[in-house]
Length: 510
Image 1 (tube, rainbow, N blue to C red):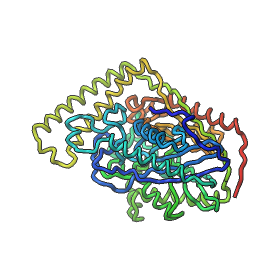
Image 2 (cartoon, one colour):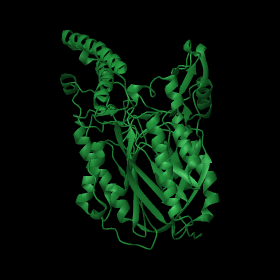
Image 3 (cartoon, rainbow, N blue to C red):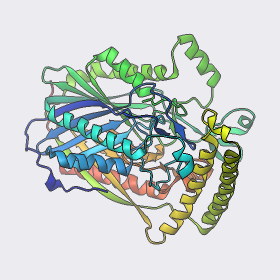
Image 4 (cartoon, helix red, strand yellow):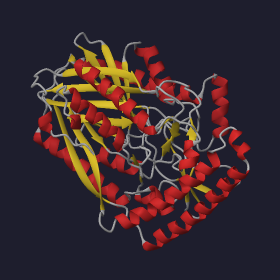
């Protein structure tokens, strides 16, 4: 992991509040690629809509931040390091540590892990003869391409900095729904609330956050230039597709520009939303009927709801533009306790690894005996799913051994104050209980949480672990509820420390 020092940055000490924007396409320049986001391989079969990286740079009195959101499932260490290496070569006056890379969590973006990666989230095929036969562009090639494009996006945003102002507000858009439900035996399940298992349904597991945090930027003439839209829902409405897509953020960008200006920039951020989904868990027939009556897709419906909320916010905040908000940006490495695994859990994982290894061997023999199977569409799906499951359980064994010498998990966290707004990042799919806890205890007037600012996996709440199931069991969680609470406490304390240092900030309204 590349960790450049602050001394490598040569930012000017500007007394002005400067804002810069940029947007660049990061759709793979070569295809097919492996699509990331399911427990089976998917080879891209085309492009539904472009994948984008959007950057927004702020600078004030020597401090700086560049927000960069990418239409990817997460930000792997390989990708983050490659972006930082590119920035260090460019010598732009940006501290690479002050760049926040985060993902929208589309499940229809390319694999962003190296072919040699052992990260547990990498569910792509990792089996020589099977992988080689697909003919996909190597993931390392896309990482290098995307890193160059993202660095170019950052450079353009930085170089376009000009004096401006910001305004912020809050409204609500029903997009994210809790996707975990609890049965009569207090067991939790992600998705799958259909007959006949729905007969055992008792309740949805947890809270749903429908808040929409908005930060708008303006030029000196008061014209709207960009929007940071912070929403507690990942963009995976079309999560099992074989076409590359930015998911509902493509429709949302288009709708926002249609309503508020064709030239404005749109930077999405996913707030704490580890157990959230845009898919309906119940009332599915009624919702589908309404979409048909309206004549819109599910993605467009989401775009309309987001744009409606933005439309309610903008008129009220336009008269509160702050042209001199102070900026404080701190980067911390928090050591979180790893999710402690037991010998019994490791032994159970070994049984599952052996079971899936046998299944994989059987599937390989079938392919060798019947070569024509490879001529069928998506023939590789079954065996890749088996390989992924085997690797998933193997990771439990690996983590059990690793915790003997490394009981903590290092987490890079960015804490910011921008006027009266607080920002805090994490790399996880962070369950909502921790997110709401941070918002409740934050000293900021409004707090924007940014998850998926790295390559973390699920970070489950204590109540979700009681019910178990995917997303809240040992194999899903390198960091568990104990680590989640440590993250919440340290994040809250860091926000308070910044506010205590400057309890009152000067404001200047338009």
